[in-house]
Image 1 (cartoon, helix red, strand yellow):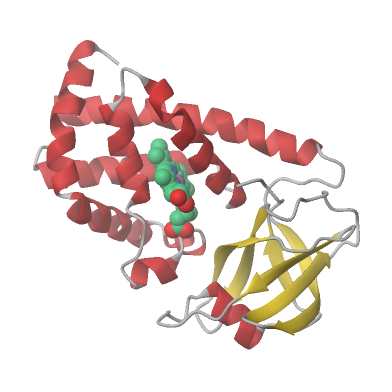
Image 2 (image 1 turned 90 degrees about the vertical axis):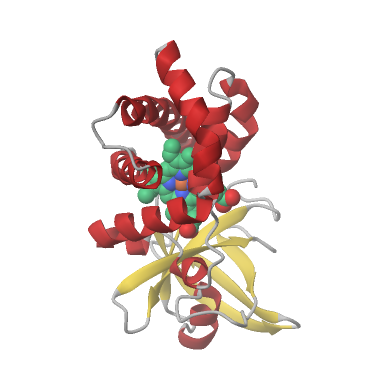
Length: 253
Ligand code: HEM
């Protein structure tokens, strides 16, 4: 990035932050509208209920503010990449997010896409995307290299559902009956289910409770005030022993 780019980006962060809600809602609407496949990736339940973390756009703004000192963001990078890897986010998806984010910035700031300002934001986004893609590549490699490890989604079968005090305990084991990575109890997995009558899938993260060799167990609590996209409610209401879910490898939080 040139010094002019850095100046341009930093000078527009406050306006974008003030318009954070407009930026985020325009961004998600545009992106999901143009790329319906991403409805399987983003959590539609939290978006519908207005709780959608403004996290993605906010993280880009926070990064832009600290653009001369990216080490400030090391903790955020660790957090974001862990989440992304648990959702099997891939490098080619960064161009989709980037294009939609830049269009949203252009809309909110009311500047044309071919302006110097958008070129500056593009440079900033690409710099951040490069960092995240690099860290995520390393994490995928580490997960796959473990004994019984894997990267991305893997089919698991529900082997037991026990009623617990505040929900139900689901026990799962890999559908291929092969070994699965050893996990600590405070690690988490993403579990992806089919949304009834919608033709899409939705992921959600669960903390592991008890794990034996080759099985994982997690507690699913019913969610009140949620939409038909609530993964927990779908699991509780529609899934039974013998059904399959897609699961990403356990990671520390
Ligand atoms: C520079 C680019 C990006 C930044 C700065 C970024 C940042 C973030 C942040 C801060 C979170 C919230 C983490 C948490 O607290 O749970 C997040 C979550 C997420 N990100 Fe990214 N992200 C970027 C690119 C992408 C891409 C390319 C995709 C793929 C389409 C993606 C998909 C997601 C999803 C699905 C979530 C979980 C939120 C949900 O389920 O709705 N992100 N990202």
